Structures are given as C-alpha cells and as structure tokens.
Length: 102
Length: 102
Image 1 (cartoon, rainbow over the protein chains, first blue to last red):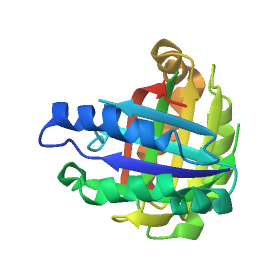
Image 2: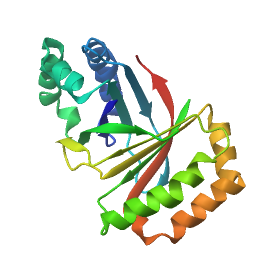
Image 3: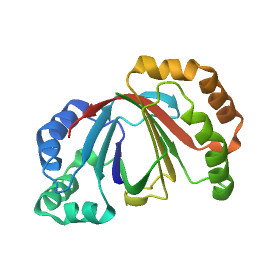
C-alpha cells in the first residue's frame, strides 16, 4: 500500500479554504482511478511542535497505481486546480510505501 | 476514529534512529491499550515542499480511548522514553478526528 500525504498550514482564509476543499477537491479526488481510502483530519490538537491545520491522506495499492491515478484526466484536473489555487501556498506533500506494524 | 500523527525530520544519525525506533518504540507502541492500526512510512518522495523522514500513524476508536492509552503504564513508558531521547528533537505530533471521505 502507498500513501499520498498532504499537510496544510493554517490558510489565510480558513472558511474559503474549506469551502474550496469540500466543493472542488473532494469530488475530484473521489474520482481518481484505483483510490482505496481517503481521509481528512482538521483542526488537530498539537502534542509536540506546531500542528498542521488540515491533513489529507490518499491510499492506493501500489506506487504504480498511484502514478496512473495522477496521470489520468482526473489527476491532471486536480494538479491544475492545485497549481492555480493561491490557498495552497503553504503545503507539503509526499508519497511513501506504508509499513503495517499493527 | 482518531489518529495520532508523528512526523520526524531527518535525524542526525538515521541508522541509530531507526534501530531505536524498531527495537524500543515499536514493541512499546504495540502494547498500547485499544490501538486499532499502526503504520509507519519512511524515506518518502517529496511532491511539494520538504518531505518528512519518518511518519508514524496510530489509530484508536475515540479520543477517550486514545487518552486512556497514553495514561496507561505502556503509554507512560513511551512518553518517558520519548522525552529522554535526543533523536526526537525534530518532531511534530498531533491528534485529530478522522473524517472518512472514501
């Protein structure tokens, strides 16, 4: 299993961010081919250090399936929207194999 | 479902970090009461911004169950080891409710 993790800092306009996320991203992401699991977390409680504001996790069966998803028409639409969206200035994202420990 | 997310920057000594993580933390974390799922990710590929080096995710059914786990003897042992471990200087951790989107 592979995961695509996206971490957002608190946006300048949290209301606009959340509206765009729910109205535009979620419908696009749900259409990505091969997507197995998609969760979001918001307004976390910090345990150590500064918390992120919004955390999205997308899972696929393999790196190959993830790459195909982002090469698809739906994946290209997401990348384009993301690139055009000034609300995403403060974001980190990364991809990795998931090791199930328990 | 609630998640405890822990993000590590690249440690000064990655080999010592990973040895300690696998030999000390994993056996402790697996004993936490009520733990439902525990995954780790390492050496991610950056998509945007600087990637973290090591990503641990622990899941419980509820915030109450998570709090009980960290108040347990096993939870206290983890907190103590964590506090004493200089390898954890560069870490962020946070707790949040998980919203299942897909």
